Amino acid sequence: MPKANETVLEIDLGALTQNFNYLKSKLQPNTKFLAVVKAFAYGSDSVEIAKHLEKLEVDYLAVAYTKEGVVLRDAGITTPILVLHPQPVNFKTIIEYCLEPSIYNVKVLKAFIKVAEEQKQNNYPVHIKFNTGLNRLGFWESDVDYIASKLKATRSIMAKSIFSHLAASEDLNEIEFTNRQIESFKTTAKSFEDQLGYRPWLHMCNTSGVINYPEAHLDMVRCGIGLYGFGNSAEEDKMLKPVASLKSVISQIHMIEKGETVGYNRAYTAKGFEKTATIPIGHADGIGRQYGNKKGFVFINGKKAPIIGNVCMDMIMVNITHIDCNEGDEVIIFDANNKASDLAESANTISYEILTAISQRVKRYFYN
Image 1 (cartoon, rainbow, N blue to C red):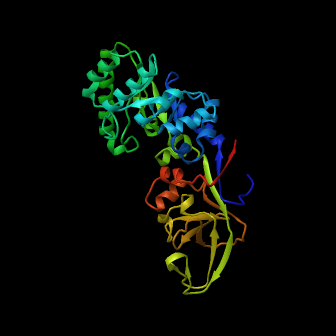
Image 2 (cartoon, helix red, strand yellow):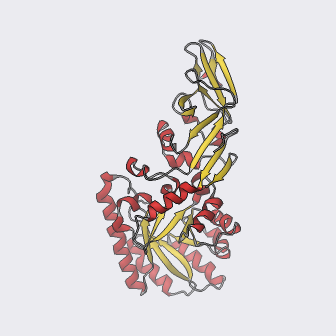
Image 3 (cartoon, rainbow, N blue to C red):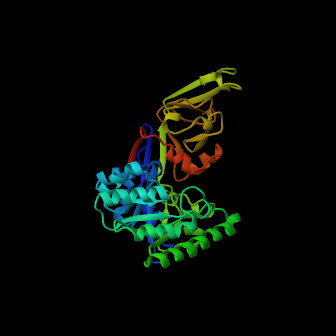
């Protein structure tokens, strides 16, 4: 790869292929694979990622909101797309763009049936979400009779799948809780099938579920963070390759004397003669203020440079007193070796947050 000469997010589609194949290797041959491409495909680029996943013959895609699905359809993506958190105001758009909604409560169920009937739909595929312990979205097990009665009373929609979401599949201290979730879901699924007279697909595993709970793979699994190179455990991280590398460049180097201060509110004071580098990336690009004042760091010529002072909107300053470098040299914020998860940990957060925070103004560059 050529050295970065501006702030750029490099996306390695070869790493995406590797992660997809690794996660798929954990599944039975008939278990389907749904790839989660919400939030600009975890901060990268949902269209390019979805196009690549289509080439890999992924079975399903998922987004959080309707607008995200529309973007994919407008880009020519034809793979089925599940919308995980649709709002009734968008139901006509969902049908117009052949998106498939998650139906998670009575209000949403009634509203979608009404729109599907008005649009003269027949057996439009929907996905019924059950809450088994995350307590975020979803029907309860006791709602099965009601849902079945509504589905039997209309020809406009049909349950393509029923699904749930694991709350703590990465936490090996929560095996008992997760097993209770899995059993609860299986009971609900059986009851649902008995009532409806047909068997929808069943899915509940996220990346950590795929890795830790093979007995819960069922008909389909939903992978998000694993596709982008993080497995929620040190062991699994070795098998996955981060897809995104965030790089920048040294704009200016300053020599400062003892007692001089750096940045807004004079948040950093030099202890002696020091050398600092200013880099064109800031909180408007996704490097939040929580990374300032020596919490976060970057890598220059293989050495770690702590962020000093407060993070600015468009710039950070780092201490390079101990690093031999020049203006114009490449700066690595994170890549496959210096992982986003390590940087995130420095500010007591997780890889998901730093990846999805990378602003759309940062140039994306794709290679394979």
